[in-house]
Length: 198
Image (cartoon, rainbow, N blue to C red; front, side, top):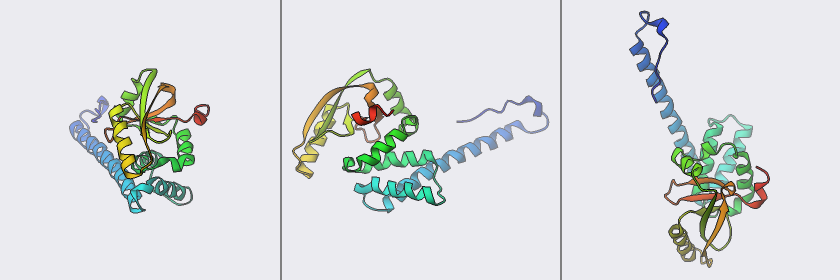
């Protein structure tokens, strides 16, 4: 986004158009570097092993940041966590890690979600029906019954786990985030054990 230089005291002393051009170039380069860092983190996560274990890779990454110099900011680590969450097949095996991160991110939803997702999340009704195609409860639900059926069929075919389409009505306060990066209209539902920790 271009920022306008408005300090009239320097008129006649400097070329304002040139200053504006350089400022905009610097801002654009900043945004490119941010994108490069985010992409680099996703690449680094993938290089550490299977996509199915992406959350484990992210956790190893996070622990390293606590003891060694690290090129990633908190924002990039949160975005990396989102990427790892979306790429991991069976997230429930990492429930302790996910519970811990959800608690840490309660006031950082605007980082975890993209702009359009945040707008959808803010406009959700107070009570909403959600669906899940699986054999048991979990974090990931969807606003689309058709997508839940797709997951149900997929899980039964791949894992043979006797999945079914579940549905329930939840209060908006139980929804941590809305994700649509893969067009799944996914909502992350907070487990009851976390609702009182917000």
